[in-house]
Image (cartoon, each protein chain N blue to C red):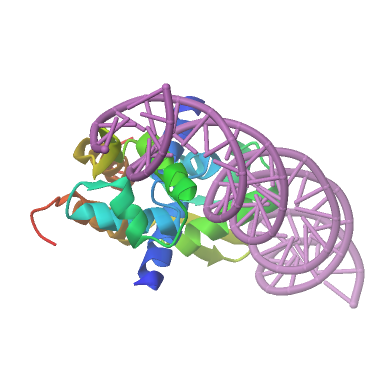
Length: 96
Length: 96
DNA sequence: ACCTCACATTGATAAACATCTATATGTATT
DNA sequence: AATACATATAGATGTTTATCAATGTGAGGT
């Protein structure tokens, strides 16, 4: 019960920071490597790395290593988990 | 553009704290007054008040004043905005 | 008018978080 | 093996956030 709440909070951490929203927006159209994201953001490389870790921990983003590069993309399954939680929240009074 | 990202982050602030998730869970079945919520949570009254403010600012919860009491409930419209954002995020590569 | 009850606000404090610089790790390339 | 590059990690710092005790506000009730 407690754990569930913690896990849910971790999922939505992805969306509660302005820079992470910006990153998600950049990933919306296609998979991108970290260096490309860095170019388009106004933050340092370690800060980007920090945000990417939070995004991956949330399950909303997936990282794929290819040689020196990390390619990041949005995880439909991750989004589905978040969607599912919100859908359940909407069934007000109808079912428990 | 910048503002959009900030507004989106505010919406999802509702879901990124363990106690707020717990509150949303309590509101899932029915509207409840603050005092009832307080009974079921392990926090002080000012802390509850603080969380309720964040939840209302996010648009996910609606407050209704009735005499001395504040009744809180989940806003389907608020949830829909969050759902809409996530849906758009899922259209990967298909449309911009 | 006074008191009580429900809730909000203020002010203080500690924990969490975002950010940076500096450094480490790991993967090509020469 | 030496270097260069892409990313991660560590450590430090300022800011935001969660929390509480104390106080304010406003609505009934006596």
